[in-house]
Amino acid sequence: MKRILAMALTLCLVLSLAPVVFAEGDYYNKEGYRICDEEITVTTAGSFGLKVIPEDIIAWQQWRERFGLKFDMTFYSGEDWKTQLNLMFASDELPDILCDASMSNAEMTDYGSQGYFVNLLDYPELIPNFLAYCDEHPEYRAACTSPDGAIYGVKMVIPCTVNKIARTFINREWLERVGKEQPFTIDELYDVLVAFKEQDANGNGDPNDEVALGYFSAGTGRTVNALLVAYGFNVNTYSGYNLIQADDEGKIYLADTSEPYKAFLTFMHKCYAEGLIAEEAFTLTGNEVNALCAADRMGFYATGSAPFVMSSQDITTDAAWLGVIGLTSEYNDKPFLPIPSGIQSNFKVAISADSPYIEALVRWVDYLFTAEGQEQAFSGYEGVTFDYKFDEVLQANVIEIYVPEGFGSKDEFRQYKATFNGPFKVFDGDLTRNVLWYDAPTEILTNEDLVAKWGWMALLTYASRREGLEHVTCFPTECFTFTEEELNKLATLSVDLDNYLSVAFADFIMGNKDLEADWAAHIATLESIGLNEYVAIYQAAYDRYVAANQ
Ligand SMILES: [Ca+2]
Image 1 (cartoon, protein in one colour):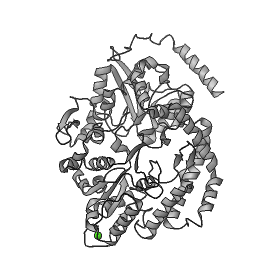
Image 2: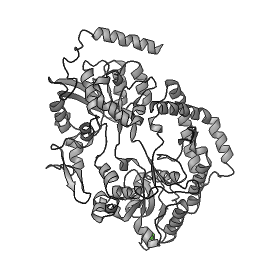
Image 3: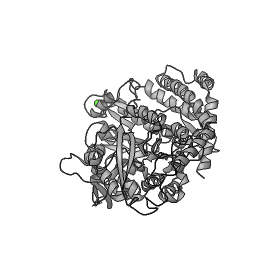
């Protein structure tokens, strides 16, 4: 009913607008740039916290000059944005294009199917670069496709591999002090952790101040990702629980209910019981975790940042660490590295179906997927905000962002002057990091100068080159889309499961629950919450994803 009404409304809208809609080609060029010879002013809004004056940003000026698009931009803080966006929907007054929509799959499916947004696929001749990108990255197409088959918006993606993976590190200096080699299996890791705990691994004279396994739910929760991979799970997780997986036959299951997962929890509990994990693992705050790192008290952990950031020092301090990738265990003897898609869950850019400039804006979205469009999102324009410079150690061209007078660093210039660090940023990250990851010869990756400059990125790149290590695509739950009915069910199911699993996870690790005596009751509780229905919904979403990917 809603759909029919929406279609009728759209039809009325099109008819009522018909007299003022520009004839095709009148105001825009179908190919080449500029997009509009005669400048047009385009309204845009989105969630963006930085206080900048849009007209002062170099990207804004470049877009005006290069494309004939003058963006009239309005930004709202993250908290205000949802309210503002709802008001826009209610009053039917969307701007021409949303530059940071921060809309979930559910919201985009809902509003898109009601006719609020342009389906990009209705303009195939205007989106050659977008379609080429989707062909090359079918998972991206799947992630942006609503269950009705339309693409109402595009999402941000992190293209740099080293930025996406679970960044796991072990302290090389600690290993040397306790006389151990880098561990590659769970058993070897356990030996090392025991040595870290028993000896004065950080060399400060106190044999009792080391935190061997740096798992803290705040700050270094990602540590569990490296351990789960050792047990054979192809995951990208910060929490360590509620993990959807597919078996070899494409059958979906919740990893948390499996034997290898139980073995993972058993390992975590053993570490906790023996004091290898800190007693405060579930209660320490992020700042307190950083203080431990700054005091050199953690020997092994994974993080969303890097050792030098965690310990508030400069990047040269990363040289004291080694990258850890592809641990194995008795449940999984093949080392592998899961590489996440890097596709963010929310929609970033969407064009209002009411805009008089739909075609020009469809071309603008398409531009964001050209090589230059991808590069400018993070780094701006060559010769304007950065130069390519030959890196002697890396033996390759890398992007060197300018530091003009008045700016303290490249990043300050980039964020506050060169680019919009959010709006229209569909590709995030310095693309030359992939030159290091994919092209640098392995023998230079341990070069002192290279490690001093690239720090954690060099450590992980080197670890990724280990012989026999397989690089695999991470199981792509973030690319799944759900129907309205499924979303309604998931709204309560996933919250209930998450709430229960987060408590059970801590209880099993801390020993409040017993992994043998309480396991059957644990599974029964999951079933009573709705495990089977949950898995069935994910199975349907996965089947659609596989179909959309073909
Ligand atoms: Ca010590």
